[in-house]
Every structure is written in structure tokens, then in C-alpha cells.
Length: 319
Image (cartoon, rainbow, N blue to C red; front, side, top):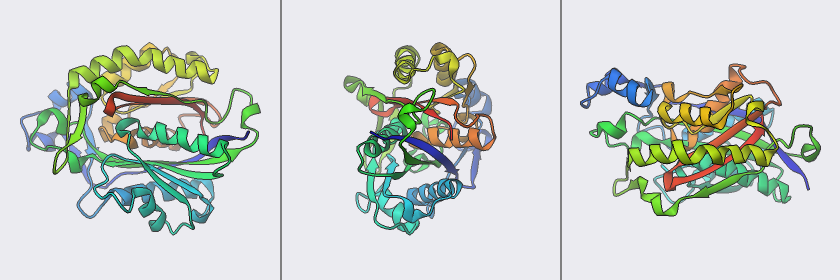
């Protein structure tokens, strides 16, 4: 059985930046209030002429260029998103059309904030099964479209963006020293607490039970993340980087500390980008790689969590 590997990354964010001071002119809040509670300073927001699939296509094109591949080389497109408005065509189909691909399989995946790590696992499994050889995996969300801009407890969290990874078959991956390019996934959910994060209504709006999510993330998730490392055969202290869902700096920092990744770079893109849901992990990883903060081949923990109170994580080798 072949393995798979992430060979390139890309990311994209709308040009418009919304600062905490900008939000303070819209709702009863302040830069100090937002920074002290969630650690966010800025977020990018797209306009009505920037649909989700456009963000996704920009990130995908950047990843393909980095991989040295043509769109026609891709035979599977997976887009993780929870902010698609239309049911059909899917975001994946629209991305394939925007990039002038050949005839790839196209699927959307909605696991909200852990969508990208679910999608990455599905790409890995599909390639291992021999049903695809090259996949474009994208996390893309326009959280601004579902934000209640009158609710200071939630609108300050959200941003728009997309991140993409090119995943290819790698026959040598199972025998690679230090483990495969994409390690085994550990995923699950807490169905009875699924209503703690919601995108509901017409028009749809984001809402959450912040304290419940915080307690769950900071107490229940660190041991699960350590199990991800164990499944990959990598000790936490061997990790070169930890890229958690960029929900809230007050969640990211204690969870990373409890994992025990004492030598790892911790992604903190939430400070500049806010919570971009499924886009947050690939976007943060792409930026780390672009800045040269993680060496090629180094082990990186990816761990998504949030909506549905679902989670998914794997250790990958940095492209």
C-alpha cells in the first residue's frame, strides 16, 4: 500500500483588514477587551464580490504553483467549508472550474473548524486505497458572511480566508525514516454537546457557548492530541511545530503547553487573522513554511477542533 505526502501549501486572504479599533466603532468593545480575552488584533474580511470559492481557488492556485503542478494533474479536489451558501455546484466543483481542471472528483466536507484535518485524512485514505494520485485539499471560509455584527461576543472572533495543500502519492512513505508523510488520523466528536457551536437560521448566523467550548478544548483535547503523536510514533518533544485550529489565543497556548511540545513552534496566526474556521490550520501552516520557520521533513502536529464539538488530528512531515 502506498502512502501520501503534503508536497506544497498555499494561502489567501481578502485585502480588507478589520482592526479592533474598527470593531469598537461598530459595537461596544475595545482593543484592550478583545486582546485580553481572545488575543486577536486584526482579521481579513471579504466583500460581496469575493465568494468562498474565489478565496479557495486563489489558495489552491498558489499551492499548485509551489508544487510545480498543473491543475490538470489533480484528480481529487476536497474543499472543507461551512460557509457555502449554495448546495450545488459545490465549492470543490466551482474551484475545479475556476482553475480549469480536467475531470477530478469533487467533494465538499463540512466539519466546521476541524474540516481541513478531516479532509486531509480523507485525501490520504483515498490515495492509499488507490482511488487518486494527486489531491488538492482546501480549507476555505467566509465567517464574515455568517457573523452577527451586533454581537460583540462573537463578531470580534471571525475572519475570512483560505489555505490549501497539494497531497500526492508517495510509495516510499511507509518506509520513510521517522514515519509517513501523513500519519494516521485520530478523529471523533461529542455529539451531545454539538449545539455548543452553531451556524443556524435564515440567513445563517454563528453562535457559540464560549465557556463550554473553552473548558472542553483546554481540558479534554490535550490528551487526545498526545494520542495523535503516539499513533504517528512521534514524541511531543520531537515536534517541530504545532498548528492547532486558530480559535482563540487563550485556547491555543494552554493546549499547546499541555501537549508537551516543548521544542515546537506554535502557530499563532489567530492574532492577525482571527478565527477562519476550516481555513485556519492550512493558512497558519502555509505562513510558517513561507517564512521558513519549519524545516522540510520536520514533524508537525495538525489538530482541528470546534463545530459539532468534533476533532481530528495527524502528524505530517513538513513540505
